[in-house]
Length: 205
Image 1 (cartoon, rainbow, N blue to C red):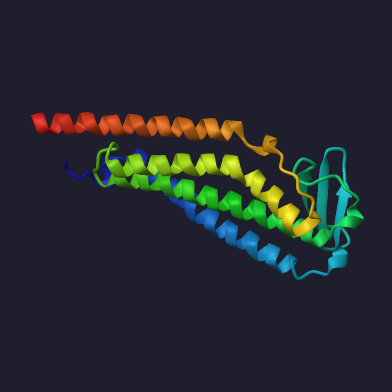
Image 2 (spheres, rainbow, N blue to C red):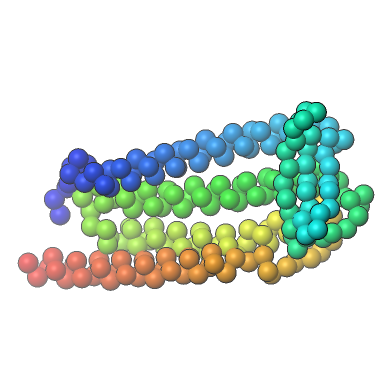
């Protein structure tokens, strides 16, 4: 297939530029937040607090007389026990680092797969090549794994590192995310069939 100039496909060019911004912007934001949280980890333990709400915990760290940084964690992920039975600083850092790492790594990986698909098309390749099928499958796997494991991993880490109470709540699994991941797999099969039709067409010319 004849290679196409980027200027001939402005819509794909604009999408690719946007995905580049989202990709590198996500990496930059991830590094900034991680640096910020690492800095917070050196704060005194007395600055960290745990407050029990109606259905959530609020783990926070005081930054000044008027500002603080907090994270909300549902009781199903962290048992509603007496705050004196665990370390508030450990609770804050474990929940914050786990959420940031899992969310951003999944986001960056998914954006990279989509960007590479658009980049492949911009090089003049058919959208239905096997490499794009594989990229869609990897995208689907990433979405499903995050939906299945993100809350469970946080649950386990809280058990091991913070409150030492074993509790696994399967309701933390995102059914919506799993459905989206499965739909991406269906789309990958459509792309695979499209590649087969393209190959059949090319061989009969």
